[in-house]
Figure (cartoon, rainbow, N blue to C red):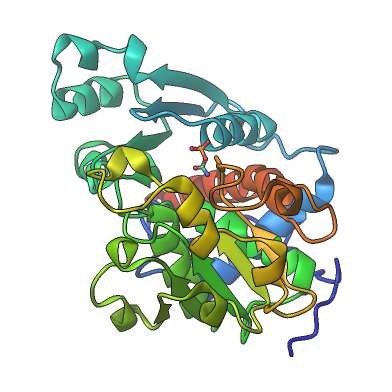
Length: 327
Ligand code: CP
């Protein structure tokens, strides 16, 4: 059984991180050391706890462009930008000229003409942030694209686990729910396997992608088996907006087999922690009392760590770009 340590991690880094790319489009392909350095830097920002914020991005312009709804990601990117001293402009698709029929490439070229330093983009289509990266001069951060990736979510999840348990390597982490439609699952699978964790995916057959084992995870169709001795239980939202309607039985039946309740949690490590990227459906993916369990649920810490991770990421991309230009 993995020993769970509490708040014992202290490996923060007080210098900006140099990355191998001027963009953050995916966790897939990132080096273990890059991830570790970003986590260390975010740890430093988290320890500041809003005091003595680093305003070293004064004069920088950051565009937050969201083609899909968001609460946590959009607000935390905005807060992160402001704490770094940058100017941030939020563009919501409902108020943009996309509604008048402007193409994605024309929108990209229009935004590029305003010379932002970083563009943060969420889009329903996988690959949209990568397209922006091809056409724009600024750094692009993927804030979630279709079923592809949500890299800053995986980074903040890793930071949350590391600050609570102390390490990632060797942990048994069970990700349960709508794996097929989840960019959070994909980014977490990549990051956690890179960092040496044992990742298990639990889902009904209709929500489990084919060939997932190729990514180095174990797949389970029975939650009781997949959760056994787990150190971390990560629940995922049922993404009804990406389903055809036949993938799940009733919500009550889904909760019976794949929702986290006390009885299923009792099969995990006795100190296992609970995570959910949000937004969550209480009583569907997770029993309400477990979501609010202040000892075991890390859901609010995940939101808090989102700001620190996004500060580290924005700062790193600017640092990387500056260093490349000077070379
Ligand atoms: N976890 C997450 O991406 O939440 P939002 O959709 O609220 O940004």
